[in-house]
Each structure stands twice: as structure tokens, then as C-alpha cells.
Amino acid sequence: MKRIDSQYHFTLEDIKKVMRESYFDPSRFRVQINRGMEICEKYALQELWFIREIKYGEFVWSQASVREFLMNEMTVSDLDSAEHHVKTQSGCGRHRIVAKVLFFFLVFGEDLWDRHYREEITGDDIVKEIYDFIEKSEFKFGEGSFGTEVLEYGHEQN
Image 1 (cartoon, one colour):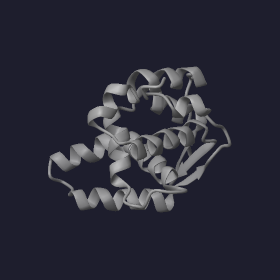
Image 2 (spheres, rainbow, N blue to C red):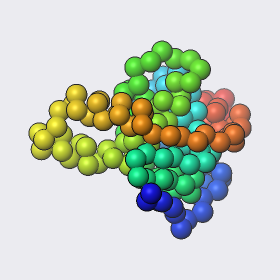
Image 3 (tube, rainbow, N blue to C red):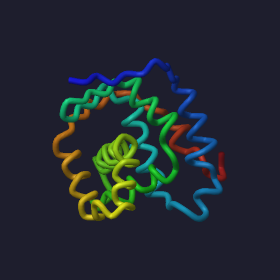
């Protein structure tokens, strides 16, 4: 197994700041996402932030390495793309699938999109790889929570 860890230590305040200033700024809601998408994305981020470990094939990512991806690699486009690629109904558990797809994009997305633009693979191939990742990965979800204030970021009443 190839254990992937991080030398950085990110705190809950770090992710809250990034969520407020980048991912869930009120201006984004007016043109990009609706309330359902927003809540799903926030819960997906919460699941990844408090993950204990992720295993896929010969790779194992620690909580610290997942947090590093969220803090240093993720873009709004990654977040929205993950949410848009999950075609299941809203409801209990959907955010965990979005979390898995988001992590897939953070780790493998750049290479996949490069291959797609070079016409080495199709959009259908990317979807197949997403399904393969969801089926074969093991996510050990944690028990932590951002708290209510984080889930309400971005709304005019705040």
C-alpha cells in the first residue's frame, strides 16, 4: 500500500474561512448554484473534512492528506462538477456520493481531463472511471460536524 499523508496541519477554522471567502460567497448563489446544491456541497465537504481514511487500490489517504487536497487543490469548479455528476435524487446519503466524486476529481481529475482534451478518452470513459472509483474505494467517514453556522454561510441573513 502507498500511504499518502500530509506534512501540513489544517484546522476547522481554516476550512471555515475558505468556505466563507471562496466556495460559498453570497455572489456565487445568484448565478451558479441553488439552495439544494449548496447544502449538498457543504455536507460533502463536511464528510471529507472529517474523513478518517480513504483506500483505493494500492493507495491510502489519511485525513491530513484529504484536508490538504481540500485546502490546496480544490476549486469551485471541482465542487460544482462533482455535484453535477451525481445523478441520484436529493436526500439522505447523496452528499456522501458527491464527496466521493469530489475526491475522485481532486486526485485524478487533472489527468482525466487532459486525456479527454487530447481525445484519448471520451466523456463516457470518465463516467466509467468515476463509477469504478465509487465501487472500489473505501471511505471511512468520521463523526465530526462543522456546526450550524457553517451550513448557513453565504445567505443574506448572515
